[in-house]
Length: 346
Image (cartoon, rainbow, N blue to C red; front, side, top):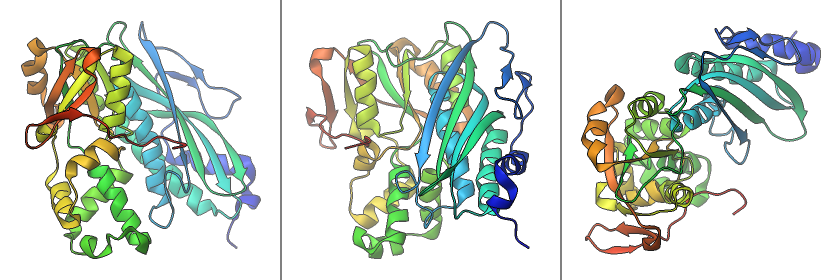
């Protein structure tokens, strides 16, 4: 007879689920099973703490997602926050709301994805909580990381004259989200164009949306060598996250759209749907690349790091605050940056 969540009960669900995640760490004195975890900080490191929440129908829809990918992304987006601080992720907890209609196998799948990401980024499960949900799934991860004193990157360190740089390629996640929506809704108007897209390109873009790659090694390399002055991860689009970094640092900035790095898959997709790839980079979000500022004297060294083969691209400069935010378009014309990215409640 199939086992239900009611048969297992909360304790049974927890015992079953945590098997999928690593739970041993030098930092963890006691983890899952008590009212709180006991953590042994390592040496003189500063601790980093972050949390993110994914909610069904807002951040994902199960007609286009598998639950293992939901779990994988839930942890990855938190790891990206630690990466943006130049830190190393260490331990995490899970807060999970499960619909009453859910099956144990679905909970297994979600934790299987969590475990896959945990092993990839070297983090251990320290605890969490479960609740029944009257509607959809939601998962909240709290992640602990560490960084050496004086090495943490923040949003407030950019200085006038710094170069503005990004890791990897931009806009892929937004195109992947478009593809998911086109496959589940006829109202997007993208159906015919997306059907002509090579399957390899479509898979790449969807995976970039569903399984982001936090740039932990890149953030740590830049921070440990003192090569970056400020950083933020690109979760809500280049336009929004650049604005946040500039506000925190009290500066302005100029982005050269001709310098933005795009994947060949995004360029193929953008041509198919007759859209400017820069629009995806500026407004779509969830690329989870790093936006960093680098002093001109350190730019060549920072770019030569090429950690894991991921390039660091110079896309603009930091200006005095009075200059505001500007772009240089493909014809070399300067104008105000008016685009904005994703923001909850708007």
